[in-house]
Image (cartoon, rainbow, N blue to C red; front, side):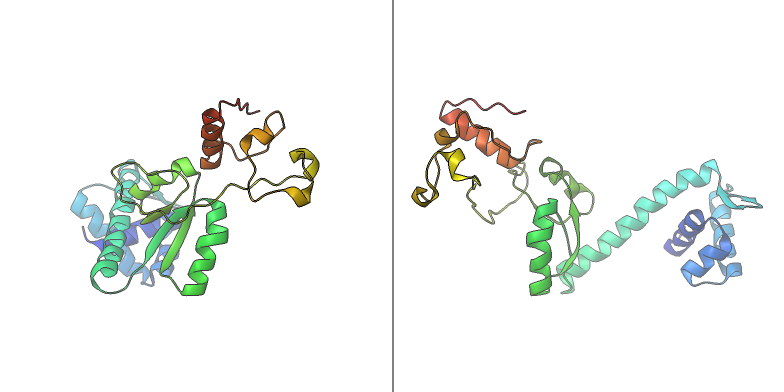
Length: 215
């Protein structure tokens, strides 16, 4: 098996016809058919069932497709890593929260021409798992597992937005900070779902021996 034949095989599987796959791969139909036939001979199995409605994967073909997708993704990833590390052509895949992508990473990449190939978004508690599926760098408000290398990018305060009546003081008298105790007994809206914001507020409430009940 060679990579070109595997690419042609995947194209036929995805397009459902030799003609469409040949167009996608910029190759003639007879040449593509020869690649598929050669692949079938080398494996000793039929990979496609030829029907009036197109090319349908056999059980063997369906099984092979899963391997081929992993193989081609691995080859592409290997090329990116080698070029990034040794050929002076950096290209990084980021993963972060939606708000971080929108307000931090995307503007940074646009303003600095940073070599950001793509940005995947996920919940904070799901981000580090993406490092096993092609992500190079994760930006998260969650602390990383101990086995990962990390640096602190920012130490940001948590701000409270409210009308003066809720805080209980005239707006002109508000200081730069508000004690958590000033919010006891008052309804608070904050990000949940195990977010770092929620965990920080919970820890602060526990340290002050205040009860925090989340609806």
